[in-house]
Image (cartoon, rainbow, N blue to C red; front, side, top):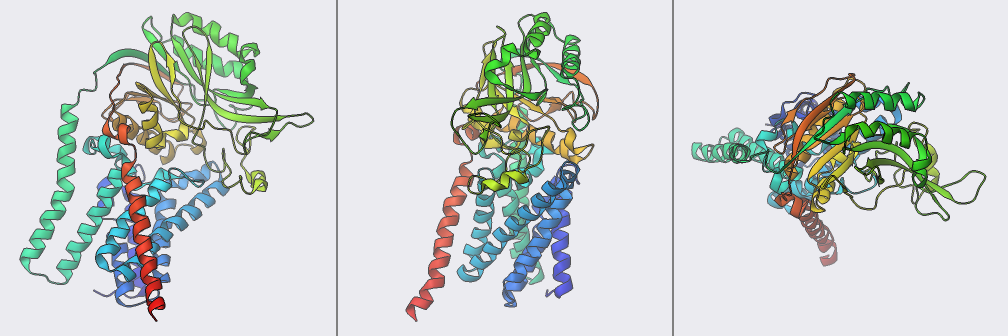
Length: 533
């Protein structure tokens, strides 16, 4: 069937809408993503067959992905209008470019290699999106199944990129079936393709259900954890109100639940909101205050978010800022602070930073860009980071401290588990987005981290939603939005290392190698006719 110009734009819009509907809490119809790309693939096919200029594919792809980006993450606007514009525009541009590259390869290399490029290029893009300066993997396709973890238990082997592969293959199979139907292929061909498509959908779900039923989440050593949700307004209270009052709120909430068996008390990201030098922590008033309040909790350790800084004589990184009126440099950090059972402090700095708010992309090469950064509670510009993932130890337990945005990086958390993490602790502040799908999506993505690693997870949010998540991705004691509360649960720490923990994002690495090979073949075939001539 041939579509006119208006029809092609309609198909692109339909693709974008289906993608939005599939994403958690903007539709939550996860399995729609298994068909959402078909209309866009129809557009690409017609552009190729009619020998239209390739730029048309880019335009249609841009429209579909712009709808996907805005429709799924419009809530970014609530925290930063400029950040939202950049996120929507840049991420859409990158996605459309990847689809356009697939189209160019298909035109030059033929149908089979072309559709192989479709899968390889997209998976390579998602892999790169975890690691480069413009990292924003929130919309990676495999994330759509975050609210149905019982059907993707095989993420313990593949991680989220396995879900992406499933989606891309399912869309290609559905597209092939549609092609055969519209071409009026013989019945046997249609049945064969239909069986393959149904099997591709059903078999992974059946395997997942078997894995779900056969895994016991309560294996390991028990550890009682108390999670606080102080509900401090991040706009009007957190960075301008009394720190002591905020800490009182946290400790009062914990006092109501802590028992003699409590091993850990969690408080959210930047619960200590004003920057202090880490080597002077025992001299600031808030530390002895916390130690005094913590003394009531027997031997419990406390993990709390803090804004911290360090002094350096020489510039250490792009995060180093010259001290006004004095020698040397400072680096500011979004930190996890552990106060262990012996009341000793340990810091771990956040490694994965939020674009525009905590990191100015490419400011290594263009330092002037730091002036464009968004003020974040009195701190602006690129923050300092840990160069690699870290774990913390207390109460004979090794755990992964995960700050906010880090929780959407499966490979990062898997690396923490390779280093021995037995529990996952997320501290976050999702109040920037108001009561929108943003904080719900953020919590849902944490379910995939627990599932991939087979670890219990505790999540302490300033506001938004705190909860516990078991190693199968099941969620419990989910707290309401804009509510001051605390929750308690006995978790089970274990030393399980899933295949995903051991191997990491191997599918993404393979996709990058395959993409490089396909691009080399593409450029060789483009140059060869000219050379022969």
